[in-house]
Image (cartoon, one colour):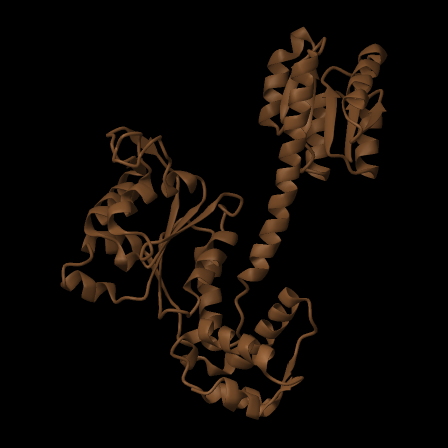
Length: 387
């Protein structure tokens, strides 16, 4: 049920709006207020999915209502109702956060379309908030070791800036997690986070994947397609395993970083992009440069800030915390109570050589939860997690 509030001082127009919305859908619950002050009082007391608000009203006009409501409940979309002489003001209200405006007398089709669009946007905002909470939980940074403390401190300093970041470390150490944290704690957190695994995309397709293509650019290009850089506009693009990117693609990425412009494959038309670039690699890029596999100028563009992620073997004291975290997370995913690991089981796991790092530990914990006893003990570790 979508709750809609109509604030309008002209009784006849207010009744028409309430009638139209009430008859349009059984899922609309419509309330009304005859002036801005009463409307604002209702907004403070109740939650609404949409507000239709007249601009010219006594006591408190629509602009004041909009500005005040956005401070109290910023997520509520507003549709402003404007008389003929209020159009300039109506347009200005959109700069203040209004979703749209409709003119008096209201056109039925435009009114209902605008209402549906505003409610869809409200639903999308709510879904995004829920998704962000889930994403935040999926990318928690677990550990009390000095190495993890250093990374958290670096993220705290670097995230609010737009500086490019190169994340280095072995496979499975959590480079993707660091990239997510950089985005979530940045001014771009409300924008998209677009991830590209450069090692997983064939070299002949990487340029199209990153920059898009126009119809006819190659055999399978049956229509225009935007690339990852365009999708990441106003947000962050994460170029994972960038050391595996082809040299031609590296040249185009370099241009995108230098000029904030990209060109889709098959055209020379420039497209402006506003993107923060975070890259990651498990390779020694300086060695790759020496062998002619990586551009030195691109390296210096990317490596403004370097965040090295330690191997799990270098922060063994975090293993008990990670085991507890994975145990609770897996239990939550499976809808079961978390299993307990004995102290001896944990100590044995701490002694292992974790060549696959945190990713390997997570897999072993899940295996022990499935195959081990009611309480995972030392014998279970020897039997099911033997190295």
